[in-house]
Amino acid sequence: MGPATGAPRRVHLRWLWAILGLALALRLAAFAHVARSPEGWRTDDGVYYHLLARNLQQGQFRICFDGLEEELPFVRNLREGKYLFSIVVRDQPTNYWSPGYPAFVALIYTVFGPRPGLAALAGVILGTASCALLWRIMRRLASPGAALLGAGLLALHPVAAARSPLLEAETLGLFLLLAALDRALAWREAQRGMTLKHALLLGVLFAALFYVRSTFALLPLAWGIALLVTAPRRAALPVVTALAVMVLALLPWGWRNQQSLGRFMILETRGAGVFYGEVLHKLRLPYARLEGETELERWGESRERLAALLASDYSLLPRLAAEHLRSGILPFVKRSPLLLPLDLLLAAGIGWGFFLLRGRWREWLPAGLFLLFYSGSVLLLIKGNEARFRLPAECLAGAFLAVAVHHLWNQLPRAKSHIPYPLSGLTP
Image (cartoon, rainbow, N blue to C red; front, side, top):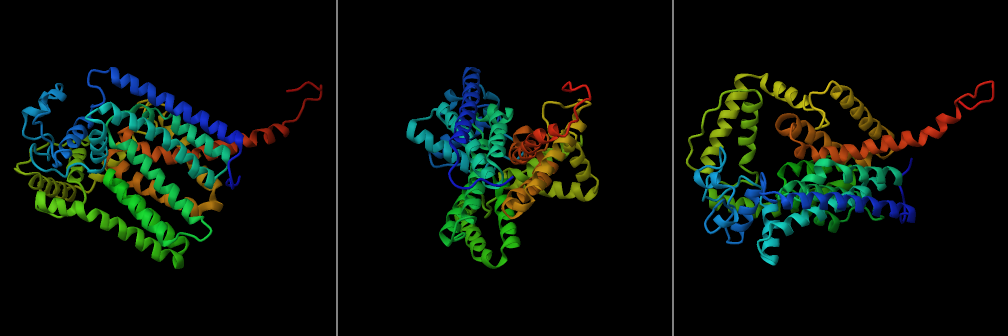
């Protein structure tokens, strides 16, 4: 099993177009279903992303309903209270959400008008394009057949297909994550290696990824570690350059928060609040209302309470991790007696896929480290029970599972040739 080199064969391109057509059809079906629902595309966090995008058009990153009441007749409860969550305060500048996806939606609204359907259609296109990016990545790492199978698994992924038309950051974040991995791998394999220009562009891509999903900042960390481990002499300058460009691109947002909130910060305030809420909710601990009058005060209060809570009982984090592990890898077989065997089988297949590509470990190390860091932090401790947060990990893990499945499929004819025929001459 070796990576494909040169232009892809015509038969592989035909299969790829078939997979992309299937991915597009499934996501358009989800688009049509959501369009017929009473709430439309603005469900869950989509309500807030729509409001943030509309307010961004007015030059403010905040949750404000002034002049938008007719657009959101189904969220009356949001307008009645001063606080939306434990931290977010209405009509005040906010840093609860990363600004990347609201800015993306605001750009669409500015060009085409406030039409959430067009932003949802952009999610459909990005979700389909993600399958092509995953194919490109795995074609460089494994065989063309394994790459097609990995892209097919993402095309059929129920969460990826169903949530692509929603106004949520996950689809755009996954696209940027795969784009960064694809470019990092392609430029690493270039004849001249990763040049300074490549490092600059990769830094911009890392910054865009951070602006959309700050948890994906684990990818630049994983990429930098992998490059320094595999090529320490040549990697220092590209790593420093890419990370420096990323940090410089994030400084304007930190300065905005300094001016609007009174504190220089590039990470969202939601991190501490969400983590605190997850610990209380999943471990069934009593909740006390936060008393701060501003978002920054409530953020600091949630941090202090979280630190005190974790310091009071060191068993809380292991218990929380165990709670998330019970959710399993498969989101649709909860409480099933088959859950543990299926999870173990999938984990073994993923590990086997990595083992089969051991000769290419330098190339897949950034993706492997990101998968390890993301699963061990975001999934194990914070949001492991929510399928949309598992999507990046399942996308990458599914690609390596496809390597194992493809290898097993190729071994079947060889195994069949070793089956002995009976003495009667009849075929078994």
